[in-house]
Image (cartoon, rainbow, N blue to C red; front, side, top):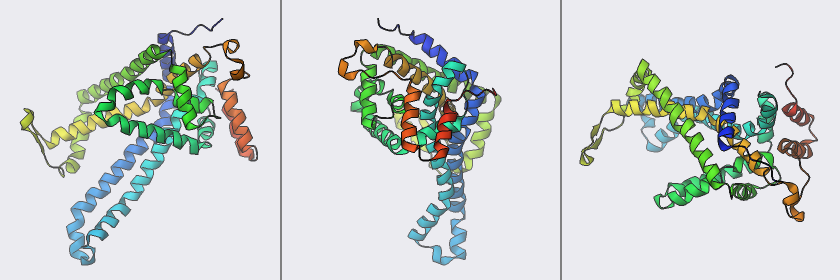
Length: 338
């Protein structure tokens, strides 16, 4: 007899509950991946800005700098510290999506999350196929930019939404194998998956960001931040949309829009664990929906919890290093201190 699936709304509400009940821990875990990216960009723009406004004085003092190649090389060099911080934070952000999947089993048992470092290490140990999966995602995103492909890519986005969950729980699969498995899992459950997609998208991409942005506008923080970046925005030309009946876009408009967009993006990134929890729960639901006895004999395998499969693969690959065994053990142990 087939396993009765949970209601889509119950999965949505349970994932929201798990995220907010551990909000302080997820907030701390995501701070560097999120704010590190922002800090890196700020450093890049700040150093470039001060370099640009002081360039005439530097050229007057050091005439040998009056060379296009030299100026470009210096510009690149002063941007490297900010770029390094941004890349490090961006990588940690990508890894976080997989590591939160790995935490799900313990979250469902205890309602708590712990030992983030161990779960993060489990993903980093498979960095090559993980990067390969993100490259596939990048190619898909590039194709999706074309307006003619919007509808087709929107449909495939639903079918491929579980690729990172498959990657986490089924380490034996290649990146392409993860894509194929996600398609197989969602097939026959497209409408339910689409509903979850719509619910989590509306909450984390629209509702939460807009509520916080409106709050920032109400207490004047958006204006304060926009005034802080006006010197950078003043370097840009004003945009004239009068031909479209919209008039000119002032530097102040650009600054306010930039601040509001940045705030929204920060909130979207901070809610990444919520999306990861929801799709990991949906993966478990779909992957266990067909009982083993109903599968063809050639496809029957011994049932294991996804986390155990991940641990077994990690042990085989890294058993020569003692630290790896400790990491794996800690990732599965219950945090008695909490």
